[in-house]
Amino acid sequence: MCSADLALMPDLMWTIDIAGHVTKAAAEVTGLAAGTPVIAGTIDAAAEAVSVGVTSPGQMMVMYGSTIFFIEITGQPVQDSKLWYAPWLFRGQHAAMAGISTTGTLTHWFRRIAAQELPPADAILTANREAEASPPGANGVVVLPYFSGALTPLFDPSARGLIHGLDLTHTRGDLFRAILEGVAQATRHVFETYKTAGQPPQQVFAVGGGTKSKVWSQATSDTCNATQHLREKTWGASYGDAFLAALAVGDAKPGDMDQWNPVVRSIAPRADLKALYDHQYQTFRGLYQATKPFR
Image (tube, rainbow, N blue to C red; front, side, top):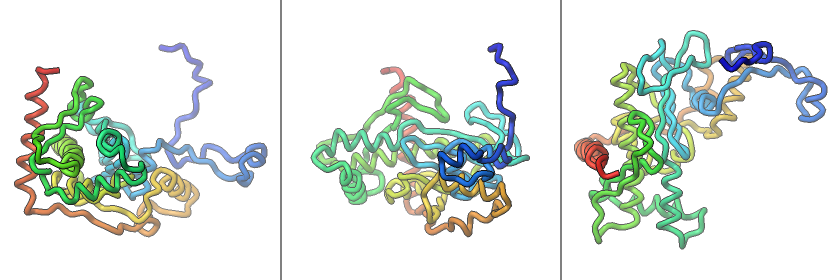
């Protein structure tokens, strides 16, 4: 279609296939040993998934970053228009993926408009402490986090953010908790999409800077009624790439990530908050529909 010369295209390879070796010239520039194997590699999000041990069907990575990205390994291709599909890194495996467009960036927006008096390094820590002082449910404040449109499963670029339920008694901590809970509710919507597609996650591994927020990660487990596992090292993509290289040369096996990077914390849902978050979720979903005519 593009009249491209196929001879210029790279060979198709699996992630841990050896694509070549470090040349003498490259060794002089990089300091790497000449002859070192070089694997085909993968994208950052897939390497993040490997770094937290997502290597088998039913395992899901939730990557808390500027956006949230989801990758679940499946045993077969997933035919669902609301999830992104791709062959996975290893032969015979597949992946179903999803995303939320405004998450960590929303916390930085909050810092910019509501915590300008605080040094940037302290603002998010202070906001999290204040959010911890706000009760689950944020005293009735509900946030739609669609400040840059909506990805999975709405795919609505015209969607916009909304702060609902504010009154003069609310605090900065209430608002920040409501933002984090709004992202958690959007995450629940994604989880339900996987379930509808016949691929409910069996194990959830969380990674990324957002996992440092106890309020955010706990609200996600509570809202989604899912336990999240956090591993010791949070280096993410670079650590996953190192593991893939070890797999390629036979220095590791897929299940070895439990030794390389053990689970150090599991965040279980609190059963006593289920009714509260179920009600909040219905409000969350209803607000999106109710405000569509006013764009």
